[in-house]
Length: 321
Image (tube, rainbow, N blue to C red; front, side, top):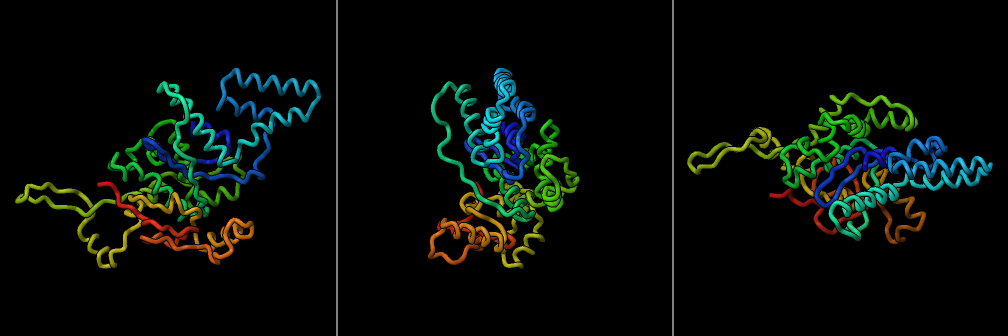
């Protein structure tokens, strides 16, 4: 469902993670005004992604009737019904949740609403540091939850799919490649409809894997206490961290629940956050008493990232035992 909606809507899925009762998405939402408008032939090619043959034939017959009558306004109205569903974040998530609800209710023999609440979204600065940080946070969800020991072992995530050999691996790799510096440059220089030369996956994999991986300090077996050892980070490396003042490395931070990624509203450099803040203030979306926008993200070294919101609760929660 996710991949079909991605093709239909023009919204790119950089990475994702599907958990037992919720999901996370990192999405690139295009400029709707810059998207090429749907034409009848293009619409009929897209519709089979979401609708059965009977529904597609109904739309095709309606378009044929409009053309036979020489009524271009009628044809435009047909196209607009589907045009407004493309390039729209709220519509994308709405359709995804609705379609999954129908599927789940049928399979489970239940009726009624399925999702507890409306989705939360955070606007991210389109730079490599921000996007890689949030992508890693998403792909590490199953590790934090204790479902797997390694992120590549979780099949229902962007990184897990990219590391596999399934038919969706290439698409998942393109999503992760799109958040690298080279991938972002390609996206900005090319139209979304054109073929883009993505960075080599082996290079993307190497850098992203380094960001994802973290382990605890190694423990030597204690024969006296009968305790087994545990493989982990070399003691020498741990000592270097201690000498640096105990600053938590970013990979370790990402193993935890970071509330900024769900409640921060806007994340990026100070300049980016302040720019969004100024725009919101000009539109009356922010109270007059607040004078500045960017708030440095607390609790760890986030590489200079800022958030639009101060968090009253702790920004980091420890990983599960």
